[in-house]
Length: 325
Image 1 (cartoon, rainbow, N blue to C red):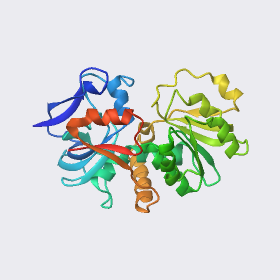
Image 2 (spheres, rainbow, N blue to C red):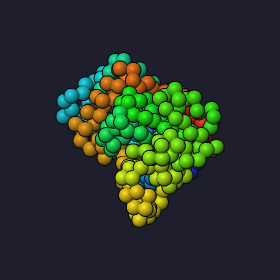
Image 3 (tube, one colour):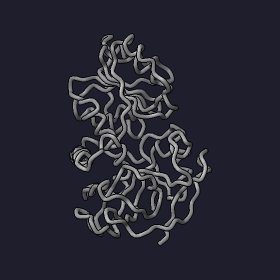
Image 4 (spheres, rainbow, N blue to C red):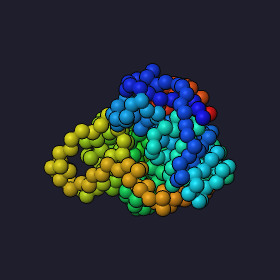
């Protein structure tokens, strides 16, 4: 059987993306065959495309998808043909009409979520879940700084943090994104292109600093984020939108207040199926309550994945991008 997919055979700009056929076998004993309905586009896909996170070439792309199960392996017990499922994990290859996936990496989707909504929320939503509930157990008395608050993940984290009751300080790159961040729940918004972030954070916190910084920007904001923390605060560096941070001077963490630093990833917070299901249950709960809402910005057909990458890299997107099949 053949299916259409997006793949790369060299690293580079969006024009290295190729659209073509690939043969797929029947699912293995612990796998399922999925017919995709919608596919999430995320920054990690760009890291794979550019080689920042190297992959074995030629390679498919994508780690997030939503679809219908068309066939199941002999040992798959809790999933059936016809189930609507979603995922946000390896193996890479979501940019395809159909694909084989390990059954233990899939979760059944609730009826209240559409295919498009689910494709905007699986990877980012599960990431936000572990960031606010497990990397740092966010509570109502905490104050946080969120870099890039108007991005797809940022808007979700703002909403979840406000549902918890925390005080949210967010940064945005332009005046156009200011209102988006405020509407998502930011108590204070800093326009990073015009204002000194650390100075404004000190002003908003009576010179105390914040309990935790969530920074998915990377190189451009890393040291500035550290300057915003209170003594013994936690720096959560979870992305590299501006490039990788590079080597860290551990003495600097001491100098700035005996700070804590972590570089987490979703894979390490969903190591077991139980962790995956518990995270998904928490995500679906806040979505059902309306505490967190999905933010779909753009939809592109699968063959136009290159346009989706260009849009995401423009840093002008206030929401999520998906591919449709």
